[in-house]
Image 1 (cartoon, rainbow, N blue to C red):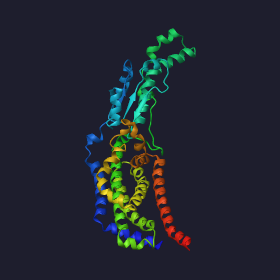
Image 2 (cartoon, rainbow, N blue to C red):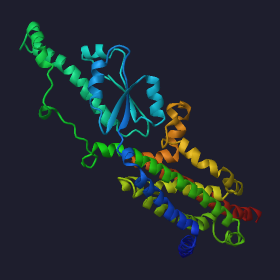
Image 3 (tube, rainbow, N blue to C red):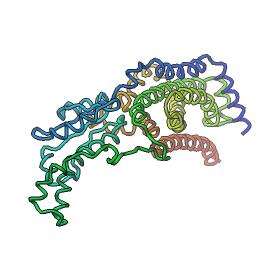
Image 4 (cartoon, rainbow, N blue to C red):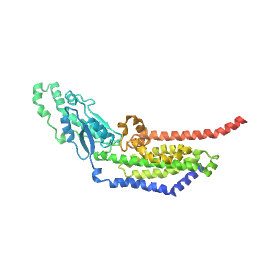
Length: 386
């Protein structure tokens, strides 16, 4: 244990003396705080766009009611289904409502089961508010008919009297008489609509932070591989296993990355929700760095593929857009990419964070077992020879 602790302290001192570490530690927080600071006020307060796909016939009254609810938070835009799918997939619209072709007939029959299709992407943020708004508009349209049926069925009025009372039933309630919907977080804190809409910027900054830390982990893999091939490390290998040599150096290399990422995410509205998933995220990439460092052909090839890594990580995540909506074959890759798992963990899915941690621990355990097996091979050979 004293050897591991000494190696860890040596690795941390080397990182503190490295200009590259200080560059990461300072530049990543400056980037996120800078983006948050220079974001134009009109961009930060711009309403979130939501598409509404109306049927070919009917739906005009629904459109009047839902479009009247456009404001500083959400703007509802009429569109066809293909346009709505493209805009949501590209991330230009947060989500989209699709009405069935028999929308008015179903409302007249009071058949509201699965009345809407809500099209969302992994980056959607305001869909709970959109869902409640659409339900409120549909209920407002169906309410006069429901009230009329109740009065007739209860015997309070006959059909002729109910028809005469229909204008009264269609009157809208005053503001103080309406049912108000209040959004809350899981801990009971009030969730403001503007805060909900602003979370898209947080997701973008968190995704960019994840990409920078991924690149740092790959550079760490190259450093570990280069050090493992050094004469000093080769002399230590017969005395200590690879994992015992590499793990302290890996921890020392990832410590500045964790600190830099945590500082960068302080620029977000809810920093802790984005900071704690950094630990399982770095555990996964750290385990992969250990695996790459053990294979010279792998870590020596990293400089050639490094320029493509950020682009691939972004394309296989919902940060700029969810390509799986346009290309369904990419859905498994997008769903299980480490950056997507990290962003889902930031959104509150602890299972995805645990999946990253479990994958990192599994890879580390396999590498450790492989070292133990290789260490026993010479001893087994000597016993058989004897």
